[in-house]
Amino acid sequence: MQRYIILRIGQAIIAVVVVSIIVFLLSHVSGDPVSVMLPMGEATSEDIAALRAKWGLDKPLHEQYWVFIKNAVQGDFGQSYAFGGKSAMEMVKSRFPATLQLGGLSALIAAIVAIPLGVMTAVKKDSVLDYQGKALAFLGQSIPSFWLGIVLMWIFAVKLEWLPTSGRGGIEHMIMPAITLGLFQVAALVRLIRSSMLDVLDSEYVKLARIKGLPEWKVVWKHCLRNAAIAPLTYFAIIIGSLFTGTVIVETVFSWPGVGQLAVGAVRSRDFQVLQAVVVIGASIYILVNLIVDVFYAYLDPRIRYA
Image 1 (cartoon, rainbow, N blue to C red):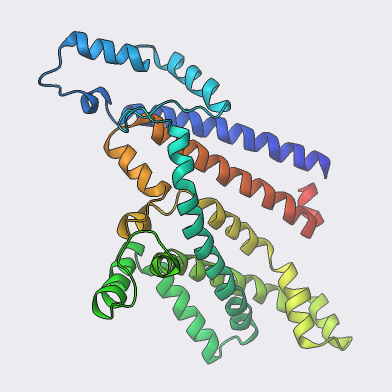
Image 2 (image 1 turned 120 degrees about the vertical axis):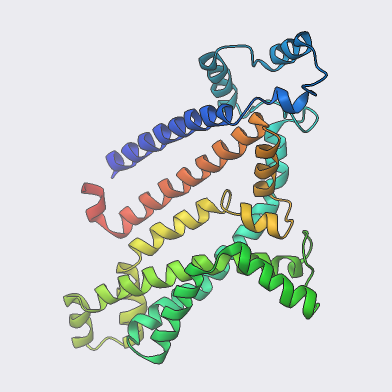
């Protein structure tokens, strides 16, 4: 088990380094931030050179990357180009609670709805409930999130005037964006849980448990669900990891002041520092969550430790 954990930690560190390199290079391909910070028609070549020197943009790319990674390890992603020289790390930290609040509620909705629905559609295979669950999964994975958000806004905010259209506030501000973000997650989890449960329900040890006279609820919810949890648990880790980076569209539609909206602003203004901070921190969280889940389901299924 210890060897497995050490191997996974090493793979996670390599993944973070690779992500940092890709993000650094792609952010520089997007364009020159000097063209945003200075009026190019009026700025002189001396002004451009001075600004490049100030922000370290006159150095070779490998030197810029070394400075970037050395500071990033210490939690310093530099100062924003477009937001008055504010710390990129502080800007991400100030937006993170809003994204965590919205993403956490959507994940909670996904778990509460998808787990019982996925189990029951498998147990009641080919019933009305099964067909309804499959229809929900099909719709949830087919409807674009931006379209669903606009439709919910039109119905519940414009027509019925039950909920606010946008912004961050109380629970009433979170309902529509959380449902918009959570519907796709519900659909995917229902399909995964149903498929995994169907495989387990036909296994020999489940038949043996029934022959022994165990209550059906115990067979389904304890023995079957535990052994069917590997694939859904893996996908749920992806959901949790994507909460930090996967809310861009929803936050834009509902003007939710989170990290996703900050990332959109950084791309538009070619703000390398903020964009790098958002992506590297988001990728690190994503990788860390998957590492934790890998270790967790190695306990659930000992065969994984030796694979």
